[in-house]
Image (cartoon, rainbow over all chains, first blue to last red; front, side, top):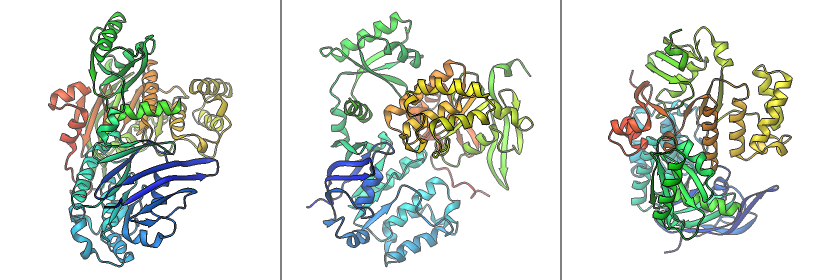
Amino acid sequence: MTNVIEVHELTKRFGSVTALDGVSFDVAPGEVFGLVGPDGAGKTTLFRILTSLLLPDGGQATVLGCNVVKDHWAIRARVGYMPGSFSLYPDLSVAENLEFFAAVFGTTVKEGYELIAPVYRQLEPFRDRRADALSGGMKQKLALSCALVHRPELLFLDEPTTGVDAVSRREFWDHLAVLKSSGLPILVSTPYMDEALRCDRIALIHDGRLLGVDTPAAIGKRFTRPLVRIAGSDRYGMLCALREHEHTASVNLFGDSLHYTDSRPDLSGDEIARDVTSFLDGRGFSDARVEPIEPGIEDSFMSLMASEAA
Amino acid sequence: MSAESATSAIEARNLTRRFGSFVAVDHITFDIRAGEVFGFLGANGAGKTTAIKMLIGLLPPTEGEAHVAGFDVRTQRLEVRRNIGYMSQRFSLYPDLTVRENIRLYGGIYGLTDSEIRERSSSLLERLGLSGSAGDLVARLPLGWKQKLAFSVALLHEPKIVFLDEPTGGVDPITRRQFWEMIYAATARGTTVLVTTHYMDEAEYCGRLSIMVEGRIAALGSPEELKRQFGAASVDDVFVQLARTTSEPGTAA
């Protein structure tokens, strides 16, 4: 089967700013593909080009086999797009918004109901409420319903979970898993590294460039240095102390611990753990617990970002 | 003032706010110690923003009371505001003013003298490595720099307490950590920090945290205490246990 999205050397400039700098990747049928990166990385520019709302300055892209420049009408009818900013009519009710989007695409809510039901069912008790009176999580569910009501062949979700609490984010990804199981391919962007784990493949994006395209597990494996985790009561104290350690390559806050890499190339994780333990003990951090660990996506992202900058 | 309150940066007692029949904040009671990083967590609509608005003197409580830096949020609103800093992800700096103009503006609002403003601007710019960009419009700064500048500006008048409302939203993982190191550095100088975040790894960075559910504080303690209490591996798991399947606000009545 052919890819649902093919992007080759895509470039977009705004004045002196290069928003996208030679971006290339493909999305396979049925795949949930994540664009993971911070604000300003180029995610929204990429979505706008792929949904035919913005013209690229260089490179090519096809969506469902259609060229994003020449075949824009065909693309718009066949994809669903949930933009990053709230895209609904605030003065219309929940039901009216949904009916409006169905009508624009020449269909009815009834025809699209099966696809939107798992998401929309939670909204139905509020069908007469104005969209601007909904909570953040509910607005997001309505926006997703509106992007799905015409039964698109491909779904674009630009930062659907930004500003949404951790529980609503999980529920949203549970909905995406249901949509994926129906065979719908999804391109989704997020600034949250933990959400990358729920994608089949991800692209790490920073300053308009892709730092890597692979499965989440394989991206984690790109981090090749031995990594140790340091736990203890005074994390900030240990962080400051390790910044003065002559063999520190990197040391970062990581949830309830610190992640550390050593500048000496030949040491194993266990040797590094022993060395760091005795260093911290010498600085008075006697409760430090140090152990080698497997790196995750965020470790990889940070190390790829740092090597880009270097 | 009691002996205990001398070391409390924030004291809330049965703090309550109703909007019509809807109870947005429902008798919350907590203390935040001076120099602490306190995480103020909750699902969207749980009442965090309403509680913060009461603590910074923007919204009068319907019931209960709160003291911030020793001042009553109901009767001493001006004193409260002089002693706090506030930074939000959504709005902090004026994009059409330059870096230096923003610092000047906020210094003036907070009542600093011209010489204080000059002195603190240069040390602030130097610390952030922004001296070369002092004449640039804030709109042109990368997001991470904007956030770090906004935090420094919120500290310009050396407030006792700073409120940070989702300060790191959308920021890359390296800058997020630099931001947290700035928070720790501020608390090492004695500043108290109240912070909201949707990043659960950042919840682990806090000394203590509260989790609000439907207007009430459903849990309060250090990340370690909460994980033990709820038998959870992470604060994320604690949060999910507490906040899952809450109803849409405004439908109960």
